[in-house]
Image 1 (cartoon, helix red, strand yellow):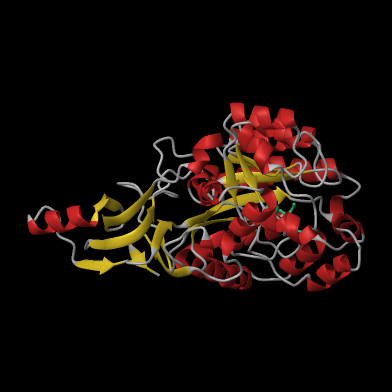
Image 2: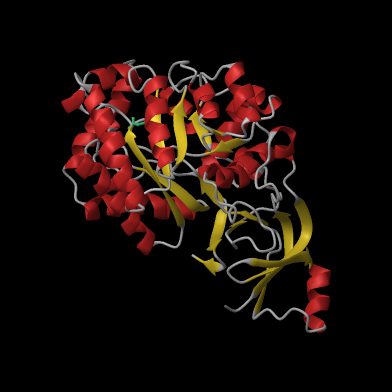
Length: 414
Ligand code: NIG
Ligand code: FE
């Protein structure tokens, strides 16, 4: 592949780290370089100053096919959105309207709405229809700078329908240049057929679905919704241990609505990440930090459900590595815009802009166990966002608009 160089980059944010993640105070170090230059093909090959680039071109040491000036711009790693549910069907705008009238998310779920409402729509959609909807959100996310996205099943809640969702995710991979990571979330809710007999559904998850998903390489991760009214910590251990036995990595939707010590459970299971964490305990923070479990925060969900935000500051003080993601889903947060999540994280969770940038890039990659992503460093994938400003604080400060002028994935402008 031919090489391209960018020169006169007003602000280059590398977010690089050999460890592949940033914890606690390190999250403020985003490796900012002024008047920088880079050379890349599908991977980043060289990083230096504009002057050095010109010298090396003159001496023949570097030979880019094209040199593009990025004066007035910020270049940063593409966003890694490590938690989404964009393969779904139907609309829940009516539920949003009811929540505005004061009905709670849990009340709507108890009436058979919520996740089960999306389940009914997903069960009657084809694989192609599901992929089409997922692609619509993924393409939009890409325009806002997302270059890697995780997508979960969890709205089928039957063998056939869960596999349809996972196959829709596989179809999407062929259609877009983004890197897509697939997660099996069959334990998102108890399907209505098994309401009175949840053990039987858990047996199907453990004995049929998880082995099939692993054998057919349909997902990289197994996830579960551990909360009051959903799955217990005990059930979580059983289901995720089964997934680990067949070689899957695990994550948990943890302590979102009520404190159930799901963060501690994630630490015990060596989960790659525990997500949401609005009700995390300080003990949970300590254990997650010690076991290097990424804490994935989803401020769009707290915003949309009007819940108190996750205690990001205390988590960072406890030396946790925090990731930010959208949680894009039809029920609790319908947004695919990572720039918006950065703004919410800064304004409402009191994260610094630098912390929010680390959380949206390198720590998102760590939450997906992807070493190649989330940093601009030699030999990493050339996934980059060109922001139309040389002051990166604008991502949070000048909110609600799109700062991504263009987006590059594996060295190609998309
Ligand atoms: O991550 N917390 C659980 N699941 C989703 C919401 C699912 C829905 O309401 O459709 C979430 O917020
Ligand atoms: Fe979620």
